[in-house]
Amino acid sequence: MKEFFGLVPGIFHFHLFGFWHILMTLVMLISILLIYFKREKIRKWKYYDQPVRWFIAIFMFLNMVIYYVPMILMGTWDYHVHLPLHLCFISGGLFMITMLLGSRKLFKFVYFLSFLGPLPAILFPDLTCGPDRFIFWQFFISHHFFLTASLYTLFVLDYKIEKSDLPKAFLGALGIFGIMFIFNHIFGTNYIMMNRLPEHMLRLFPFLVTFDHPMIWLILTGILVFYFAYLLTKWWNQKNMLSIKNDN
Image (tube, rainbow, N blue to C red; front, side, top):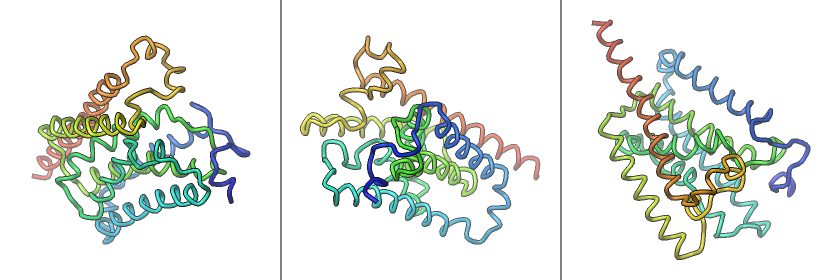
């Protein structure tokens, strides 16, 4: 049991762009496509809204509980690295609240965070363990499942995202960056990778070392990811408008 919750790879190893990386990504993409193409059938199911929202929130919460409790019991928890202040954890926590409350207003912000946190991690994961370690499943739920659930909220629950939500969400993200910048400075931590980027990213993109200003790279990444997330909603809104015109 101790090995299962450890961070040392067992039988299976996770490699960037390797088998498990590709498989996890494909599972997520297929799930998103099924949600999109089967959205009308899903809406006919009487439990598609609140029960699903609450399941998502509880499932993500239990994932974090199971992640932290063994760490605390084994004495490996360290506030320098294990507080739920990484961007995916902050985003995930806000998304759980969104799902529990059914808050369309909060989703207008959290939707963009559901891309900003998980998407870079999905593309370039800092993971070494395979499915025989819990960290593998914790990572999958915190990133792949999170992004899939966000798109379920967009496609099936039809929570609206407008153009005006983009700058507001970006300013909100900058606010989070600012708060964490101060926190990192006070406590000597590196949450949201503000002081230094992960080693695997520096190896993958050596040019990042030549301009060693993580905050700038984070902001540039945020701009690209937010714009991509907005383009998806723009396409979705146009498709919905066209569908309404055709029905009329």
